[in-house]
Amino acid sequence: MALSTFSAPIGDRWFEDYVVGAAYEFGPTALTEADIVGFARLYDPQDMHVDAALAAKSAFGGLIASGWQTVGVLMRLAVDHYLSHVASIVSPGVDELRWLKPVRPGDALTLRVTTLESRPSASRPDRGLVLSRLEGVNQDGEIVCSMKAMNLMLRRPAA
Image (cartoon, rainbow, N blue to C red; front, side, top):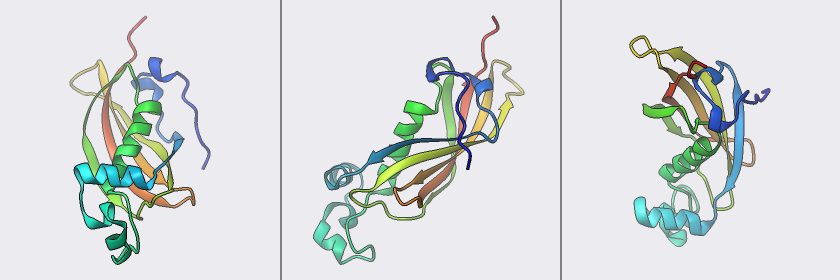
């Protein structure tokens, strides 16, 4: 896959800069056992996420990250590198969220994001909707998580 670069920096990126078919990669971000257990103790305290001994006896054969933590890591990468700091308004939601492979301690996740659709709003001419496919890819090139995200973006102000 050929990777794209944005024509504008994240602090001056508007709806018009999200080109359909453009693909980007950001990261990696590594997850330690402490990261996984700490997150899970707060938000998803299932044995496979918080107890290495019990996780070893599970179907996963060891400790794995919560899927919600995986989404959080990908979201952080999207906010830091993909979503405009001046034009991103809100996300009406995500679709087709899938956790495809477990994320384990030591895994390093990269966000691969592809702009699928970019259309001006029919009712609000100052904004548009950007639909993106986000994939979390581990250090072995395996997709561990995927989703489609919608974002409302402001259009570039007239000069």
